[in-house]
Image (cartoon, rainbow, N blue to C red; front, top):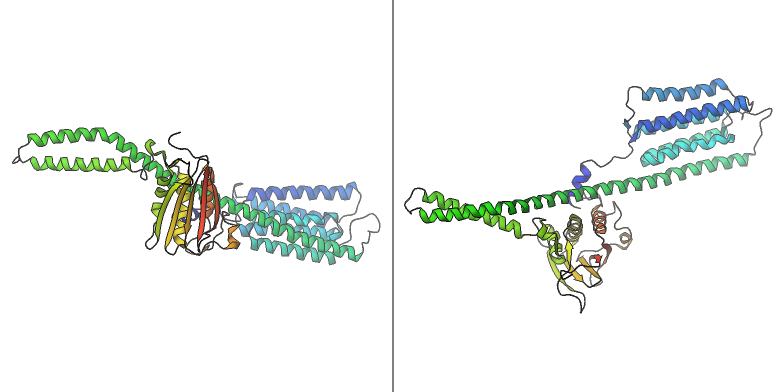
Length: 434
């Protein structure tokens, strides 16, 4: 994992469980309105007898709590995992009280007990979801045993015990299914969002470095002309100043320093790994791969480079590639991963044909486990996750960035000996002649 990725993660990716208070308040107001409407229709519309005082008190308590949590807090305020859990736990208990007063599990609105669980599955942590699920299942179990008669004209219908047990089992199992399945899907979405944010942070860092290189190239170009003039004038002064003149030493120093400046500017102008000026926007693919990999060399690990056409009839000259931050960062992540697992050597082979260009990075380390191969490229999947700051984002970021350039990334193990192999292939290479 690159330092950039660790920095991106520590600098504030979204935390779990945060939700706007306004969202939960609006959901509760909708629930209060629905409960009032249902109670009114049942009591006055259908002429069923309801314990209006108790039912109205439970609904009023929910509305009062909504007003209490809303006063003094901005609508955009976010509440943490614990507050959201308490908020939804109250809703479960309030619904359980209403169902107790109106027939328990026989009441067709008993399905509403699943609503707080479904909401919690999308915004809460696993521990909080388990707590809400257990509270819901306990409420369902109690309602199956203790409840007031179902509001009805005359004698309320009596359902068989086996049917009521089936309702209890169905609601309990559905609670677990919604909680675990919903949380899992929401968690994967959050992980993908975090990983994409880290990828964006790594790419932004590489783009800033590229911008610095472009600035250096522009400075070298702009300073070249005045520096040449200074060098010419200095040489003229050296010819005119006598050897015993007190100014001779100063003129020689000026000449030496101007030569030093010209050397520095020349190095900036001809080093494609140090800038991204127009002359190096398109570079030979092997040179680009070496530039991306050179920063990850490690003592004791030999990094070797090979390049050449894949078959006869292919141009001997290497294809050219856009020197983009995505390629630099993506190949760099793959090479860093290989170097960290290699025992002695990392081989980087660049091949091309008229239909594709390919880079293969292999090492002599333990290789990828078969169980991990199918998951590689997924966020937070790593054999070193949790060790030394590794979060399982390096391969994901490399794959994401390289695919943005049109490449296909595949993972495997070397067929000859132990070690991992990562292949990056671009279709339709561009050669300088074209």
